[in-house]
Structures are given as C-alpha cells and as structure tokens.
Length: 269
Image (cartoon, rainbow, N blue to C red; front, side):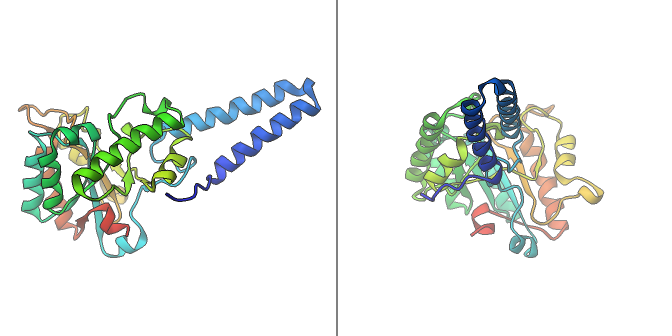
C-alpha cells in the first residue's frame, strides 16, 4: 500500500468543486456558471478515462524508463489469457526466440488454468493483473467495485504464482478517477502501452504486424511497450489466433533492430 497522491489535474478538479460549492453559498444566483464549470470538468474527466494512454487521472506507464531505453529493451505484453489452446503455442514461440514477455492475466481464467499460469512463470515470463473478470463495464465502477475487482485478481494471481503482481492494466484500457487511489491502496502501477495492434478485432496478420513495427520516425524503438492478445484473439484466414502468425516475424524484426524483449518488472525495477 502506498499513499495516494492525486495528479495535478485531479487536484485542480477538487479545487474547482470546492470553489463551485463556495460560490453557490456566497452567490446562489451564479449557479449556472458553477454548474457549467462542473459539467466541463466532468466531461474532461470522462474523456481522460476513455484515453488509455492519458496521465491526467494519475501515473500511467506508456513507455519504459530511460535506463531500459539505454539497454535497448522493449516490453511485449500479452493480454486476456491464459488461453489453454493459444498460450502454450505463444510460450513456445517466445522460447524459440529467447524472448521474455509480460502476461496480463484475467483472474478467473488464471484460476481455471493454474498449471498454465505456473508454466508461464517457470519459463521466465511475468504475470500481471488484468482484473478478475474483465468486465466491459469496469470503467463505470465506483471505488468499492473497482477495488473488489482488482483485489480479487491480485489475490488469485498472487496465490497461483507466489508473487503478487506489480502492474495493472484496465480492461480495454478504460478507467475513471477511482482507479488511481485503488491502485495506490493495492501497491500497483498502471501500465498502458506504446503500440497496440487491435488484434482482438483484426485477423489480418500483415496489418497487425505493420501496426506494431511502424515505419520511418514511428518505427519500433527501444522503450516501446507492445500490446498483443492470447485471450480473445482475432482469428486469421486459417482460423488461427492472429498472435501466432504475428509473433515470429515480429520477434525477427525485434532481433534485427538490436532490441531485447524483457518483462515490465525487469525493465522497471
């Protein structure tokens, strides 16, 4: 547990609410101005929660730190598993390339496949928290609902692996202002990504790969955090989970660029 420190934007939001309340007491006739200011504030809060890489609501890891960049490290992060058909094949591909990855696991899926979770760890990868149920409505929860969902996965994954997760990724990356104090209470860091491939919707391996490696000034670089899915993965033309077609050429591009795939925990000690 760490002490929660509101982000500068959240401090400004708290101040605005206090000022609006004081203004209504001192000048009730000015209520349209106060209400308008509060509505604008809540609109910005809502928008920030819909932007997975935003830092307005609190700290958010979207790139690896400078020391990891200097070591030419990147992070492969794999969400929504474990999946008993897909994840073992992902592990074999990672092993063949000598690459390490971070698996953001759903608690209830991990509990259903405990041996697979332990295999992920045994092969040198990391397990992190992706909520207990991966509810689509997660970003609408209040403090208690979010705390229950994150804490349940923390307990599930910690018990299965012997190590409590250090990082949390919100379902679909969506959240609200309650998440930051929840993570502080549970000693977790929010982790988003640098590059995502929308590989839960796009089953075209070439397009998914292109989004991950980029080009020109936007080409794959040290410090990038990549997002893929072993659970809920889109299927390619042959019915195979798209991650299985994308990983080999992606890992080859990573190696050719002189980059080293490591876990988030190794990159961010």
